[in-house]
Length: 437
Ligand code: BGC
Image (cartoon, rainbow, N blue to C red; front, side):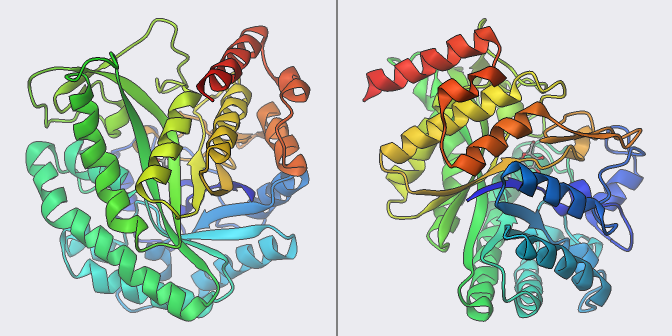
């Protein structure tokens, strides 16, 4: 399965939606709040992208349903919203594109947020009921994601404080441990049961983000500490709580960091993604001079992806894995082909070593709203200018399409997409894999 991924809030215009993020944007809490996304709520726009991606070779699409649009008031279900989503799903199915549907991607209905959102136990039943409505209306979805990246939301909403509900620091972290994460984990299970009960053959998973932490000095037991703490809090806690109650492990992977020990505990995270933060509990990120960085400063290290996949396999043996997101912020498309090629080589190597990967979804189909960062970071295979609406298929989308169509990675054939320097780095990476066999 070769797909691309989107999330409803990041690609849809407002319409009748009522969510916590709409209020957040109304309060001008994001960069350039007036810019326009790809407007997938208007029939024709999502469809145009889906057909172009199909023509390139893609055979699956991850998209989401917006809870605050489907249930704008408690118990009041919008038939119009269900019809629009049905239109998208039918469009995909008619073209043999397998749909994967996310029920919740960071955003909550305004009324759920007012009741305390993920902090209030009542969200478990509210989410179960929403899942029941969706499963009843969409019994034909082959792949479900209940919640997207509970760990990233917890970090950005309760530790970094840069997303709703804007809680911060050690107190926020304690709220995560005490109420947010148990509610998310329970909501996943309840929704998953509903989806399984009603939609029969549909497979249910959750998309967990993995940030890979590597000791700067692999021989130093002290340098292992910050990575172990961050891994336990950010990766493992949510993986352990959710994967056992899933048909597959959905993994979102972007990047990782080399870490060095620092004696103090820094519970005050400054930025939205802990992985984009140079300060971690008991540790500090070490920057390397020769690092390849994406537009938002995340290192491009395909070996981290390989290690992260092997880690999931070693902890949760027997669970099939689907890469539910993997991608790069790269406005000029200078690195994306290199990123895709090397990360797919890493994924292939992981499969050779026994990891049961069933599918890969590239983030993202199209340039979209990168949350609090607005439309600045561009992750799309399809480029879209938020000011002019101008749209173009990036060169890297063609490379991805070639891989998807042929279901193989022919490095020699795909070399034409790389710069001379990237060819050397790719060869070096391939060599390092030979050595590790
Ligand atoms: C999220 C996406 C986001 C992407 C790039 C993931 O954490 O699921 O919504 O756009 O990363 O930052």
